[in-house]
Amino acid sequence: MRRFLGFCLLLLSLPVFAQETPDALVRRVTDEVLEIVRKDKEIQNGNARKVVDLVEAKVLPNFNFPHMTALAVGKEWRRATPQQQERLTQEFKTLLVRTYSNSLTAYRNETIKFKPFTLPAGATDALVRTEVHQAGNKPIQLDYNLEKLDSGWKVYDVVVAGISLVTNYRDQFGQEIRNGGIDGLTQSLAAKNQALDAAKAEKK
Amino acid sequence: MMVMGEKGSVVRMGGILAAGVLALGLSGCASTNPRDPYEGFNRAMFAVNEGIDKVAKPVAQGYDAAVPMPVKAGIGNFFGNVGDLWIGVNNGLQGKVGDGANDIARLLINSTLGIFGLFDVASEMGFEKHDEDFGQTLARWGVGDGGYLFWPIIGPRTLRDTGGFVVDTFADPVQWAIDDVAVRNSAYFVRFVDVRASLLPADKVVEEAALDKYAYIRDAYLQRRRSQIFDGNPPRLPEE
Image (cartoon, rainbow over all chains, first blue to last red; front, side, top):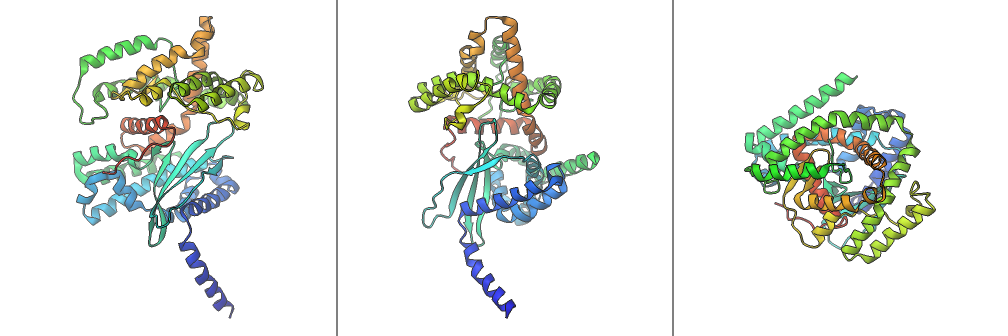
């Protein structure tokens, strides 16, 4: 009986989750992640493995990496085969997670303020705007672009102080593609990821 | 390396800029990127700056490690307060009179209640800190950016923002309000180190994230400027 009740509750909660608005999603994930970081001394001391685990468990499911990679590549994306797209997406995802997870270890007492948000009926694209406040410094704008998929709202771009972390790669990717095609770009990203791994292993 | 160091200023930059503009005229090199017509020159200057930064970065790291947080905040606030006058003027020049009045109110409040600007009490009272300079004013007046440039020590600027930066430097209270050359140069030096130290966290991200550090910084600067010119609300660019 109890199991049955639990199942009913689960069924009830599912549609609620599916209808979570973009701003509620960003707020919930932000709160959950910062709550963990605040309590975890190892993360604050720069334990890279733990941060990456946290990001992979809590943050990544809410991102649409194929779309992010397509956006970073630009028009050449459509000419790549599905296999090429998949490999490239995997390497780009690894790079983004490595580099930006690190910034979480620098988190201390900054507060996140959410700007007013309205979602027009039927919208499939949304911009959630936040500000990172730290004592003695100007607030930093941190914006998320989200799109509505069948599985719910997903982030496809993050914009810090007006700088898109995704489209900032477009010229660099274009250069690599001109030199060695999509596979050349994938190899360059893989080499970069390996170098970062090696550097981290050396530090330990 | 200086990322987006709009406020880093330097004493004899007039001479450096003149030499640079001359070199630009001479180089006139071909580049594939329409936003970076002087790429050959810029990459050379970027390499020079990476060399300079081998000295500047350890100084900034030393400052960051040695100076306690409240003192660093005080130094940052002091120069921030000095800057609010010119920020207010630029808001006025862009027709944003309300914002300009806010900036002058900040200056008055922080110079008095904030003890010569060491504390930013105005922010706590709800007077928001703005981010303006003459390059942004020129952009609002319709001046095109004229292509991207990278200067040693000063960092990234467009051609328009290089002109704006020269005007900013002459309008800078540190330039006209301090008669004693040694004091003025010390103020420039402290501000340079303070700005460089504030960029240390960004260094690590750029080193790890970039495939091509030069291009990463260039594109981040151009995106950031676009956002600043539109006060954080730039119209969306069409997707390719």
